[in-house]
Image (cartoon, rainbow, N blue to C red; front, side, top):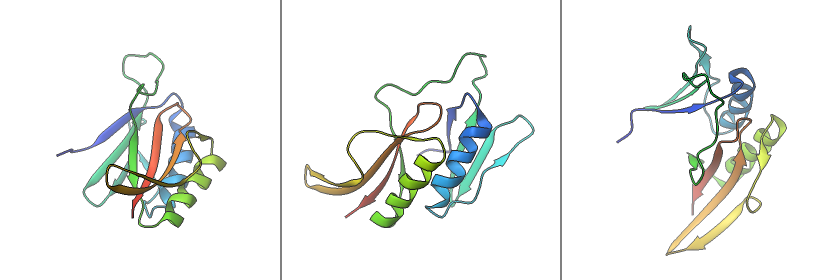
Length: 125
């Protein structure tokens, strides 16, 4: 359904450092920066990009929005969370762990990236 996901970053270099570390724990190679200064991550058929907003205004996280990255195991989600914290991320919501409801069991690890985007790593259990 989706071709790619692009989010704003006030400091692409700092955000790239954060995502290189956090996504690296999920098996994603370090991002590459294109001639326009955008960082791009390619993994399977998925493309995730970071860019300074083209309107010149500050980037901001989507209120109510979350970007989820798939983890194979709870340990991978924990490593994502730890690497994110060590590289400019902020822990939010409950600590990483299992959540149950509506007939689902999910392992979730939430962070804010350096630009305030809400992200998580999720493993289905």
